Length: 142
Length: 146
Image (cartoon, rainbow over all chains, first blue to last red; front, side, top):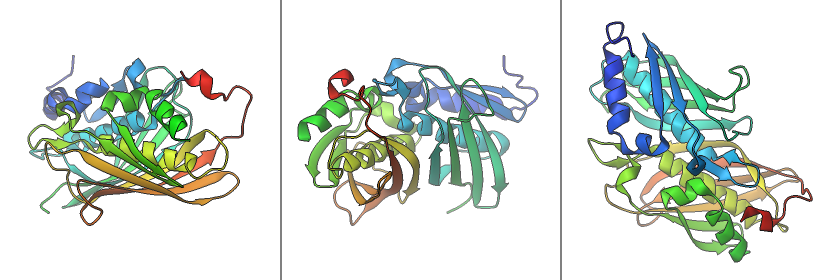
């Protein structure tokens, strides 16, 4: 159960993920405790990018990270709608294995119009990230 | 080479899941199509396709442009990828992707890519990606992909 009393925005973030078709297609979930969110991408065969080595597809991992970063911004702001991405940079650090993937996003800065966010995805060990993302979002009037 | 490319698309579940197709291959250049589908929507209020779909499309095409540029068959792994979103994709429309591998060293392929609806004059997103070229191993046979 999400402690909604601690952060009323948590329910909105969960509702957003639930009614977003692409988040549903990925099969992404999130676990929110206060302002801290861990996103979970349960393993599914459709997420594979390379059958020979049973690796997750980079596009699936980066989609997951982008949604994680977006959801984190949505969680800690009072925006009416999720922020729109300006650009993203993805570092593929290690191979993503055929296992569940977890991610957390850290907001470096939120200004009046833009937010700068980092996110990392890991599997067995948080200290050994599979993929890292840097993203900028529009959070104000454009 | 064309046959290899088709096999590669079929052997990639996540590309198949999104409905991605390769439409044209030239030396070091590849074109692809991401057909519109309701399940790809990233913003339910506006019906705009999720950025991750474009990332997957351009990542795939950039990787394939390496295959279309390298003299021998090699697996490549994405090192990094940057996407700039210029404008949202139109609701209900297919997206065309185009990638080129513009430089190769012994270990790295440098690529760039574009996503658009009609022509490159009106771009939805651009990408720049670098790929590590895997050294050939005896297990890297195309047959094992199926």
